Length: 441
Ligand SMILES: [Zn+2]
Image (cartoon, rainbow, N blue to C red; front, side):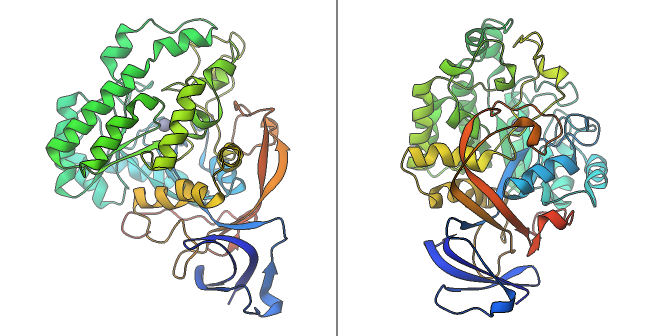
């Protein structure tokens, strides 16, 4: 073995157990009961307060590089991921320039990432009006699926699909069992809502009503039903949509859904006016909605929790004026997802096995990563040492992502990531992340 880790507690597919994990050539070569004495010279014993976890998989990250690298870049984003125990990310196709909507753009993106990534990185493609002929080539080139919007995305170079265009794209994806991931807010509902302007969070919330999500999700489910294509609901915030998703799943439709740490940790009631670091779309909603989202996770209606890390520069957040109408929407949190979700989960009686299911196992399954997200023989040796009971206070200046803005600043959390290995190597010695392609990960 190149490395043997001995842990009194490890989150494995069989629950939390004492194990020794042997690593050879970057893969997990053995998972033995703790009693098996490991060869002492190569063994690293975890402390009593530490739990060995599989590296987390975050399938919703906006790196913005190239083109808007001053917002976030491959070096900083993947450093933040590594320090947060996330060993695999999948990059969103928009906010970078060009957006990843054809083969040439995918090449540009790969060149920007090559040799600069501290964790493994895969790419989503984009589905926009007019790029239907590019979907198959992007799929063949190894993207993990396609993102689309049903309303203005916030950037002009990534326009939304109409329902007709979405139906066409789903039919095309059905041909090669591709996955569509959808920003599900309805344009008409948003247009009819009062516009967002000013410092009051209540006004911003009213500008993105739950009904916008509910209607869009209804439409996505109906089109998935009609076309047979796989569809995934991104960043679910409206708990009102949970029965729709539950019903679609009960009908056997290939529908999955994710939510994000900020919808599970924060509540609209507690967001101060002018605090645009909390602005994201769909928005953070009321406390009762948050409880319902946790119930959705408990019931398995929501499959996974991923960050939707979507940073920008400090000035674009308009922290000076606090105007929600003008601030960029997006929460920066890649490094904090695990402690944020864990802090809230433990309070609600969930154990780390569930958290790892939501943040490693299920995201790996969504993207189709065969060797990620679990501590088991044959998997990549992506491993994290986590001290779940250690408290800390978030300081935005100490985080590794590019611009020191996050709504978690000043928040007291539990759980510190102490060491992370990527394919058996300590990430602090990196960057040695690789670029992943579908079918080969
Ligand atoms: Zn996003």
